Image (cartoon, rainbow, N blue to C red; front, top):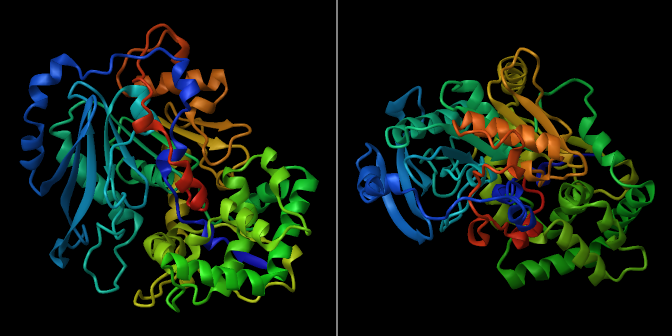
Amino acid sequence: MRSRLWTTLAAGLVSACLLPSPAFAAAVPTRAAAPAAASAAQDTDLKDRLAAIPGMAVVQEKPVAGYRFFVLTYTQPIDHDRPWRGRFQQRLTVLHRGFDRPTVFSASGYGLPADPGPSRSEPTRLLDANQVSLEYRFFHGSEPATGGDWSTLNVRQATADQHAVFTALKSLYTGRWIATGGSKGGMNAAHYERFHPGDMDGTVAYVAPDDAARSGDRAYADVIRGNGTPACRAALADAQAEALRRRTALAARYEQYAKDNGYTFSAEYMGSADKALEALVVDTPWAFWQYGTEADCAGVPGKDATDQQLWDWLDGVEGFSFYTDQTLSYYAPYYYQAATELGAPEVAYPELKGLLKYRLSVWDYIPDKVAERRFDPGLTRDVDRWIHRNARNTLFVYGGRDPWSAERFSVSGRTRDSHVMTVAEGNHGASIAALDPADRGTATAALLRWAGLPPAGGQGLTAAAPTPAPFDPALDTPDRTERHRLPGLPG
């Protein structure tokens, strides 16, 4: 049977993919934590200066050591080509380090938390930079009032949003700018470079899928079929099949779980716990390899496992909460883009033949009020060609075992100072910190160069001339509970 992996396409905390480990941070020299004295006088009126930008409103300032952190909204047109169609408020945050520092533009391609707090992407820490984080249009908190018309939920409109925010803030942050993002955010960084190539001084895109709709492409399936030992892959297939054979008992448990936690399965999305269970089980190998490792194969339950053991393992790999209305409704804007312009992987699971009841479509994850539209491969093909030929100061970092890294962007000899690097045994959490020493040195030297900072003695982060900010657990530690609860989030 063949199943589109729609349920593993929504992206989870991208910042979790972009952060170095405390051990790595401790091994490198750091700079002082206090803001630069040269900019202290300017910092005192930052709130007023932000509020004075036309269309910008300061919602809240929150305390954070060594920085100033603001939650903001910015007025955007629903349609940048036809501004008379109306406007909406788009949420963003600014983590201010100093006007003398570079600025990192971090866009996940998803929403910000309901109550945004400060965090740093890997480039932000490595450059000791400011960071602007932008919520993607149509996500909760940045929703245009369109009555179900999602036709302006597309890459060109979203990159125009980002360009407008950059233009507004560039008057304050006049130094170098670096775009970054992970997974869908990595795609977003590539899209931004394509449609607004003059804005950023550099781009760092992590585990960014490049679904260019190539005929006969089996790259995603090949990673799923090639990861791990044959015994591990067989164990995963057996666990999937066993879960489906116990469908009645597990679906009943799922119903009770939803009732106990205030979750629902409305007809607008999954419709039933039984259908949600099937979606979860089908996507298990993808989610397993997205954040798992070979060592995790030992924990795959066998046929003699109890229902509770099987349930606990599936919940740890996938997260039962993901397939409920409450989570799927949040990620519906992503599914719409996957259905109309971004594309999605397709992997066959012949070992499940005879055990599946449903033929899932991406439209199962999009509200009924949204008008159905056809998929257009033009966007992905255009961006793929443009990046390959014209990328400038761009770094792509991929994980060798990550399913999402199977389809990747490439650069040619025609591009300028652009690189594609792989963490050989890495998964969806691949980072500059995890690259081998030679690649890590090349990557960090490039990042420093693009940011207009002096090179670190030619040896990357291990040299005597430091630039990274100190590791801060409050800003740089991923929320691993959330990562495991929503493993299917690209990003």
